[in-house]
Image 1: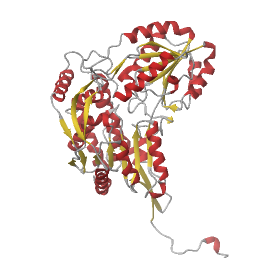
Image 2 (image 1 turned 180 degrees about the horizontal axis):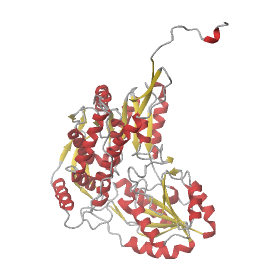
Image 3 (image 1 turned 90 degrees about the vertical axis):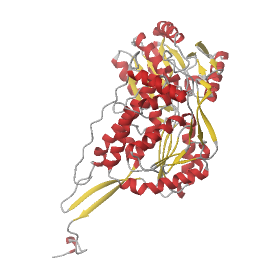
Image 4 (image 1 turned 90 degrees about the horizontal axis):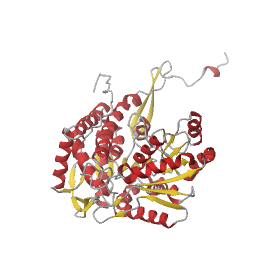
Length: 543
């Protein structure tokens, strides 16, 4: 836009709809669920705005009813990855040269489309293919993704407005260029909002993207591409290439034009990608930006001054919403002896009453875990705990894949603070509790800090302010998002920028300018109005 100093609409967090009985949103969601359940689509790769088929087909299923197929999708290969890289390179000059206001307008329109006509499309797709309840889908696929786009746009004037001082006779400025090369976005199954944000945050800054979604979440990714197209995103800016991780990543990592990786997923995969980049570092045109949010072994730490009812409610929500398949989910808890008997009774009674099953039954609190591999991992750890002298399974522990991949909400009590389920990320509805002596509070804080290699989220519960301050200090590096008297999940865009350090990632805080800044390469420009016309300096003269 010429000759205008543009402001963007102030962002606001999208209201979470209730889906109460008789509400219009509940009726609309049920209708969309029925549409998806009674039909099936064939999902192509989308490269340069064109549908591309390979004939190598896989299925999108319902984890809570694994015999039912939602869609078939074509898997990419070396040839199609090369096509996607070529399309991204072709689209990049015009896209990066487009005024930032125009790029912003596309994503503000995308946010409005998602708040309206696409809301139940993405919610229903997320519920069915990722086994998320209606409320969890609403928070994720609708509200958080809308917030990502609106708040990311609101950061642009502040980023571009960060300019240097100028001395007399000169004018200095900084240009925030897109990276030289394409960005590879690798997205997880568990959050449609993350799947939408990881490719679009670099794109907003002028980059183009090759996007590999999780194979268990291709259905929602396809509808996101439909939304992007309707919002006006030019062909080739985002190229959708689902498929086997190694087959897709291989040619990407070998390409000299790799400009960056935006990743959410397992620590092991991220470390593998970073290692591969490091091994090829001399071959790239520029040093690739590597940004990742990975695993977590998130804690809830209770002080003896904690309220038992508040602690129980937040342990349940933190550990078992979305079957514990949140990178921020509460996975280990430290509870003082003086509270344990009271907490134990209340916790077990509540957990045993949790309803889980088909997410289209709105009375269920939980659905199924994502696939057979995930269920098998959970079952192995639960059975090991049953057989161990170092732990007891207090409730739950039932794994059943006859209809869907269901794991009952499970609580394990560990008698050894280094027991495996206190350290290992399980990514399912399993909470391990360690009971400590009240007098050992200081010592157990240090134990909590060193037990796990991760540092994503954590929480402290208590009313004693001195105890809370001690936890804040001792656990300074144990969590990138730290909560006081709240569950360690549910970060809200614009309120709690999200990310973790140590083995949990690069802590680049999705939903804030800190993340967006990773997708630009600054160029300093100095203009001198009256240049020097003699190389000699005054000091060189003797008289």
